[in-house]
Length: 330
Ligand SMILES: [Mn+2]
Image 1 (cartoon, rainbow, N blue to C red):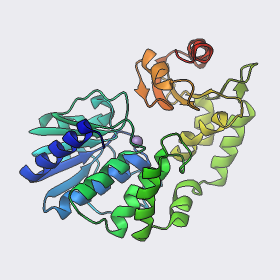
Image 2: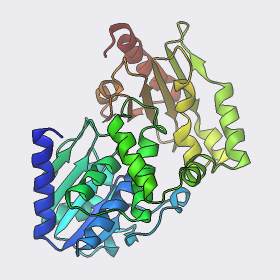
Image 3: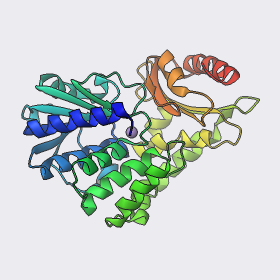
Image 4: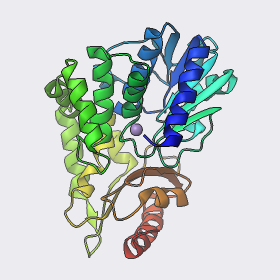
């Protein structure tokens, strides 16, 4: 751990020691890292004798019901008693908290724990480590710093964080340290088989038929360096796919051998806005691309929302992606 990191961890620990009532919030449409790290952190707080609630817009989505309830979870700000400290995990910008930003704004002290390189340091206390593979990895370090040994359920939460954010230990962020932590978590009783099933083998037949329709129309540039898929609103309306399969779409254009940049264009609500998810295999920094459109994320995974029709947004995104591929940067 670098000096700055150690100092940030110390400040987080002092803030925890000095206070009693906490909320832990993550971003809207939470996934494995958001929920896993929030639950593991709230549980750690409880074990340190604190009151802690996971307060996250909409609560826990159906696809993540397998998470153990190691701490109470609420989905609306009205269910939250104002905390002394509002913590966020995996949240790069305050707006991503959705309705829970109210709680964050009214708390006495705010603590921002994240690994997005695009994090805007909106907390009173900020612990941001862009080198961490997942916020779950940072929370594991916090357990170690407090000398608290994770229970099997806590270990499961952090393991899910790490598995999802490393693409099952395949992305660049997968370091020896990540494997050391995973090894420790498995030794606490986590079943990788069960986690794999809960995360990846959870589709319905109709989800897969939706995937088939999307992939039939997958596009690549003539040089094969950019690949993408598009999801028109009408297709979402007729197929009603689960959110997991939609989130997973970007992995398919990414898996084209020659693809350096891949993306998904999704007309979610027919509101003149297109959601875009980007992936890179490492040469191109897609955080920079997303930032050009007011979004952000990580160097290898990012997103943004762009005004326009699918055709208009495709043109805008392709132009920037072409430049990025040509220069190795946007
Ligand atoms: Mn994350």
